[in-house]
Length: 287
Length: 259
Ligand SMILES: Cc1cc2nc3c(=O)[nH]c(=O)nc-3n(C[C@H](O)[C@H](O)[C@H](O)COP(=O)(O)OP(=O)(O)OC[C@H]3O[C@@H](n4cnc5c(N)ncnc54)[C@H](O)[C@@H]3O)c2cc1C
Ligand SMILES: Cc1cc2nc3c(=O)[nH]c(=O)nc-3n(C[C@H](O)[C@H](O)[C@H](O)COP(=O)(O)OP(=O)(O)OC[C@H]3O[C@@H](n4cnc5c(N)ncnc54)[C@H](O)[C@@H]3O)c2cc1C
Image 1 (cartoon, rainbow over the protein chains, first blue to last red):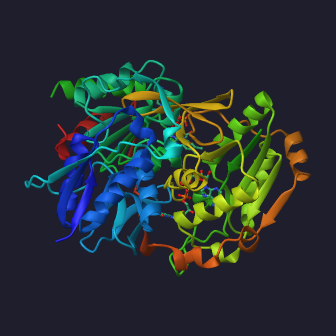
Image 2 (image 1 turned 180 degrees about the horizontal axis):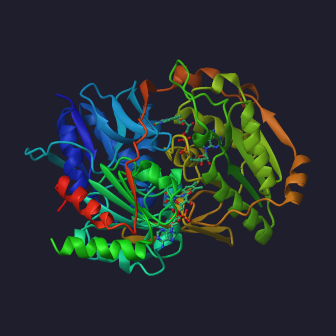
Image 3 (image 1 turned 135 degrees about the vertical axis):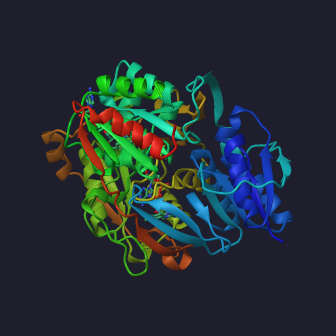
């Protein structure tokens, strides 16, 4: 049976992607060994993957969504004469892939007409966990490609965005802050604490420095699909909606009754979030 | 110094868009310069002031893509090049990077090639690294900031739990994100000056690219179905000063087993 190579990069999402791979063939995990400089070596990683593909019966390669995965896929496609479909949310047994397009206003089903097919797959996809432990192969790209070797890592600054809050991509509930929620985010944090929710933000909240860049929701941030998304002080620009319109439920708190966010909200609350959120938090704590 | 900025013409998603019967995006409708390409244009404008440089905007797309080139000229590019050829419609990423690399070659290369972080229609982010690989130059991608000095480019790249400082010697390609700057709105004077700036048109023959290597025939992604996502039905909207607000929120949580 054909193998589905799955590049490992983050424990929670790896399990989902391996489970997805298992529905398509024999899941084989690939772990790349290396330091911080790997981020600047997608071509070197792609070449190492291409060697594996040459030696094994590989039908598809699954990569993590995001810039690094897209770049590895892009260069693997170039090397293998194949193509990559990015930001996939589902793959059928016939290797047709579904993704959101046009800022989340449409969906496409597409396939790669070359072998192996290459996909980058989003975290938080809908797939039944697989019990079967997958084979894991380690690759250690030793010598970087000539042009990639010229990129040097000069500094690494660790940032801790999460504290003890759940991760944005796996959280059941996200409370998200917009320009109307700052600079003091205590109302957002109070509701998030009461609900055990993750905190996210609009680009405006990130640009203002209130929310870490890794927690931005939208076209140039994360695409999330929690069970509940609370948008507080967020107007609902199309670039923001692109990242959150797949949420099961949306609650919006905004003092402007004409804010576009209300068009997509299951429950809209017109008012000052500094009053509404603490009152809601108190009610939740009192349950 | 010479800087080439890659700019794409994309449909205006908010104004509505169409896919044709071959399930390809109709690129002749209402469109605009890809907004994510304003950030590399702004970086180029700043670097040109700082270091002295010629800025060339390069676009590949249908007739209408000239609009993206014009906008780039308003935003500070000195001249523009438009790769226009009927054979290009329906090209995938591999073909697009092939053509863009050939065009950069025809322009005699550059010290710095700046791209956007993705395009509003597909946002695949596949092009920048393919282009750098074809040109055999280093790529610094996802730049949240960019500086250039002594023939070395330095960027900050933000990952989820860390920020990296990456450097590469010129010539290099850099993809610039929307965290890097705030693009200045072009002044009336800049708009006027832009009318006099040249837009050169090149076709595949002039680039010596085989038409069989591009377009739908060469594309290895086959789109089988495109379906609009039904708009979300807006729900209940309540005024916060009514007593029901907190009760409505709590009952929504309970009904959906969220607490
Ligand atoms: C290429 C590109 C990519 C982008 N990518 C993203 C992205 O990934 N994510 C993203 O979010 N945006 C993105 N944007 C930006 C987007 O267009 C909007 O500018 C942004 O989402 C606005 O953020 P906001 O809703 O927080 O702020 P605003 O639009 O300023 O809205 C603030 C809202 O808060 C309300 N408000 C103010 N005070 C209160 C209060 N006390 N109580 C209740 N409500 C209050 C106001 O009524 C208003 O509706 C992108 C833009 C571009 C051009
Ligand atoms: C809805 C939709 C989904 C698609 N999904 C896929 C897919 O999953 N896989 C795939 O291989 N193809 C896909 N395509 C095709 C894709 O749009 C083309 O391959 C395109 O040529 C390159 O991809 P991009 O626009 O996503 O570029 P990106 O790599 O996202 O763009 C990055 C930067 O490259 C530069 N750039 C890109 N295109 C041009 C251009 N024409 N002229 C000048 N500069 C440019 C710009 O600076 C831009 O900011 C899709 C197309 C559509 C319409």
